[in-house]
Every structure is written in C-alpha cells, then in structure tokens.
Image 1 (cartoon, rainbow, N blue to C red):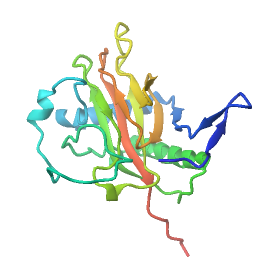
Image 2 (tube, helix red, strand yellow; image 1 turned 120 degrees about the vertical axis):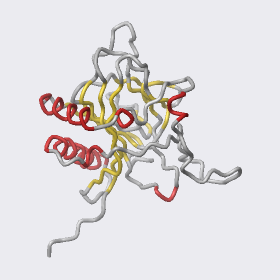
Image 3 (tube, one colour; image 1 turned 180 degrees about the vertical axis):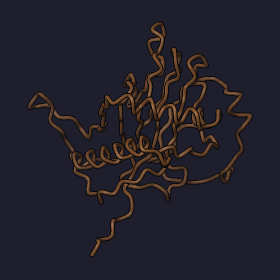
Length: 244
C-alpha cells in the first residue's frame, strides 16, 4: 500500500519522512461497555472460538496442527505477484464475526471502528465512499498461563483477486489481561518494519488501525486474567445509492 504524500514534515524543517506508515490509535474510557461485551463473548463462544488465530510463537503448536485441514488448492509449482505476498500461517479457522452480533454494546464498538476508518481515510487524503465495511472479525481470549501469541504475519489476501486498495486491519482491546511484570514483553503488540520491532503495549479501550500489508505479531502472553481483543479487517464498502 502506498500513501499520497511522498514526503511528510517533521519537527525539523529540513527533515522529512519518506512514505511513512500511518497508524491510527484512539482510546475509549467507558469500561462498563467493555466489560459487558467481554462477558458476552466469553459466555457465548466455544473454547475453540475463543483462541482462533492464536499460536504458540516460535514453536511447534501440536493443538493447532491436529485440528488443521487444507482448505485451499495446494500446488507444487505456481507463479504469483511478489509485492504483497501473504506472510504467516494459513490456519483453517473461520472468523467468528463477533462484530456482527446483535447486541447494543457490540454495535457501539462496530460504529467506533467505522468512524475511525472514515476519520483515518480523511486524514490520509484517500478518496472513499464513507461506507466502511468490516469484512471479518475475531474476538480472542488469551489464556493467562498458556503463553499463546501470534507469529509474524500480515493480512494480504491468499487470493490476489480479493485485494482492495483501502484494506486496513485493526484491533479493539476489551482487556489487557493485567500482564505479569517479570515478562516485560508479555502480550505486547509488535510491528516489524525494515529490521526493527515497534512495540505497543495494549490498553483496555484502545482502538488501533494500520495498513493490511504491514507485518505484525503478538508476543506470548502471561497475565492474571484473560487478554481480550476484537481483531478485524475493514475496507471500503459498496457505494451508497442516493435516496432520490
């Protein structure tokens, strides 16, 4: 993905950033809503749904492999464009599409995601139709003691004809899980760009958005309670037909 401004100014008038990667972060403090949505997902989702997408980073994850079945045309030789290769495992677990739940709290969070996307596109100077669409969503509960996280990956589509110009990825944190202090990287969200790791410690009520092709990961989580996040893919939706 590329951005409209070739150079962006910095605090030094003679120094510019070359095509910087934009990240959108906003915090919400109405934690009664976060607690209610957390409980809704925890009560209604199965154990398998609660951990979908999670991995045991940098090791063989026997539980994942025992439940994996190939759901794509696995070829021995093939050719594809290289600019946006998908990175990470292709684990056959469908999204639980939690943001489609018919619940007032979930609807509030989904609207916040849509509003953030619209605000982000406006500030980036992208043309869009003001009708963002969440294409997939997952609510995840990271167990306090199992050390699960997520290896490096991006959200580039496995089928290239599904790529869109304004596809962004995000997360909305319902709980940080109170990570234990002697694991300083516990559950830390990480961007991986040009050989550097950019760490962000999630906070309850944090909404974050970034471009779909940026590689990211989650460090193994150890905490006192479950770490809970709603992950999602969001992009331009269909054009809105005029009323007249």
